[in-house]
Amino acid sequence: MEIKLSNVTKRYHKGMRNALDIEDFAFESGKIYGIVGQNGSGKTTLFKSLTTIIDSFGEITYDGVNVHEDTTPLSKVGIVLDDLTLYRNWTGRQNIEFFMTLKHSMDISRVDELAEKLSIKGDLDSKVGSYSLGMTKKLILLIALIDDVQVLILDEPFRGVDRQSTDALTKFIKEEFMSSDKIVLISSHVANDIESMADTFVKLDKGKIVESGKLTLTNYKVKTDQVEEFKTLLKKKDVPYENNEQTFILRGIEDDDWNKLLKAAMTAKISFSNINKISEVEEVLN
Amino acid sequence: MKNAIFNSEIFKITHDQGVNILTLVNGIVNIVVTIGWVIFVKSGAMQGSASNAFSISILVLLPLLTIAGLLTSAVVFYLVPFRSISVDYGNSLLQLSIASGTSRTRYYFSKLTVTALRMMVTFVFLITIPTIIILASTDGSVEWLTNIINSLGIWEIVFVPFIGYLSLIALIYLAVVLMKGSLLSILVAIGINFGASLIMTPIQIIIQTSIYNSTVQTSVQAGTLLWWAILQQLITLTAYTVIGWQVFKHQDL
Image (cartoon, rainbow over all chains, first blue to last red):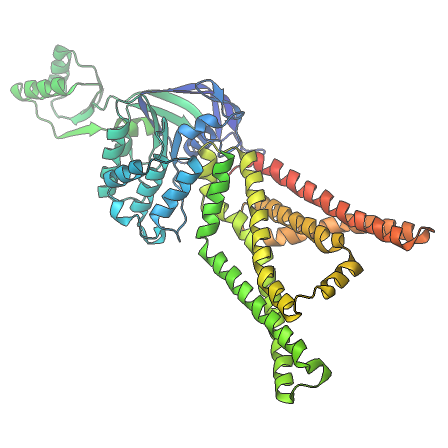
């Protein structure tokens, strides 16, 4: 599966700037994309355009099929939007049955399996109105995954969800989608959530894709009084760095190399007043 | 996919407890009102042969019950289509349906058809038992019914209200689409209806004036007016449906 966007634009009101303005970009299978950007950068507009929830201009193709002309490929898309709600007067199971009817799905064993993994099996017969936000999001995720989806879109899936549920959801999505030939797009305002799941990031700003690439997760920010000694050590170990007074930023270091560097610094009696692993997503966002 | 939309809509209808209870209440009120009128007619209250207490009590109760029946029927036939169409906007299921690959055109027309069918079934449900009660009270005689049909005509009784009601459902759908399911859709529907009558009424006056000023026979005049009424409903039905569909096709959900 490949999703291609060509000259995709969306403007909500005349006279305003484009909420989305993507000239050419492709989402490739086997990758988990973290979509980052400030509020209003176009993340939700991108997701809604990809699924035709909003009417955008340009060409959006799934394996060559333009979804503005033929929506069939969308049957392989699961989506969890931040503002989605379900029938509150129905039970979780009734909501699932409704979507199974809509999607022509028959595999009830898949529902049980997913509910078990998401730890909501025992709550499926309660009314959705009594669910916590975390449970509701789990149920929406379950509905999104009823079919064997090829593309999963998650817009702020963890907003308002407690840490325990976030961890459970993260674990579940990683198990289901990591190392698969599927595409996952996830946005979150919490950098750690993106980093713990995504292997590739796409940065949006004012509707445009301004940066994209792989997430390395191995950047460090250290502070030392022994600036010259540490510079010498870094040069000796051939580690690239950025330096500003007592602060050093080291990018793209493997864990082993980092441990060796720390050991060498101890031997050279260099001490650090501060060591921080930098969130690459936060870096990108800033 | 079309069947899937149909089936999912039927799933919704069967699980829509609030509306189903309201319809049931309306059905019971209609039955009570029908029985009340049958008793009233049979008791001779109109001729003054019934006892005073009975006549007074039935004369007070029956109009109240009739008004209640008419009001609940109005709620059922106006608000149920509104709720049925607007509910998906309210809880974002429309977004999920479209994001799952449901064609907007199929969705729109399926929803319109299912809503119309639902209301037809509701109408049959509401009218069946009262009709049986009336027929039983007249010992199966349908003379009164044939008299009404003969005096008004089958087209006026069945076809014009039927098309008119379909047109009303299409109008409600258009208003709901324009207002994205908001409660204000009801006012918008009333406004559009008023706007349409501003266009249609002058045309109707022109037609009436021209045919009554001519020397054609009364039956021909009545026929022309009937066809104008049907044409008028068909024009509004088509206009509301097409405009609603086009807006929905390009709407941000």
